Length: 249
Ligand SMILES: [Mg+2]
Image (cartoon, rainbow, N blue to C red; front, side):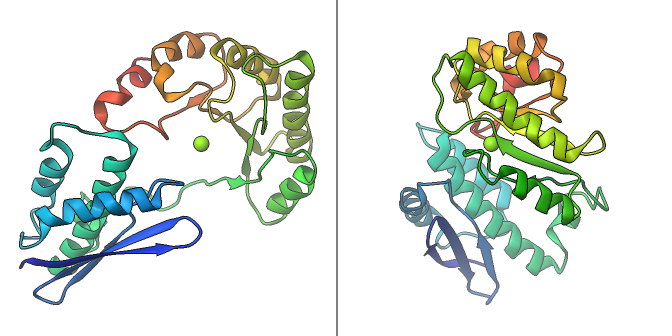
């Protein structure tokens, strides 16, 4: 089997999909995109397609190695997202070629169910309570919210209090049997992140996400050590090596 054609489809407002076609009629789909950079990732897929045309699509790992590590410049959001979407499409082709779901090719099913949370915004306090109540009504046992939309790297006492107030509103609606998680998106400076974490700690967040920017990974261990709130991160890390500081934290 050979790859004969790779197309990309930009779907407004922010999605990109790729379709890989083979000479045996099997087609695979993937989603090579990173938020806000769909057109740049599309260009990267076009460049990588030059290597893939004519290749055997079932050498999925081989292609991943070449596309990820074969060039002098590696990783980063654009290249990693382009390769990830192509990888998905190649696995899709492999699943269809072998007549098996991709999870079977990757080692078999692991979980029969998984707990999920609902996103409730939180950039603006208005409407937050209604949104949380609606998600509780819909049956969710956890929600995730933004800590703040615009905030200073070193927030004023009022800005910090506003964050606490927002999380407190969520906790009051959710009660002790449901959870609220808070995404900081790296919007606070390292010192302020620690301060805000301590301020919302009594409200028992399920976790706080991205308290630091991805390039501040060396500060993560100290932050984790300064709070009992579980820390989530990794949304803007690419490749195993970039996860090392987080794993050590
Ligand atoms: Mg996030």
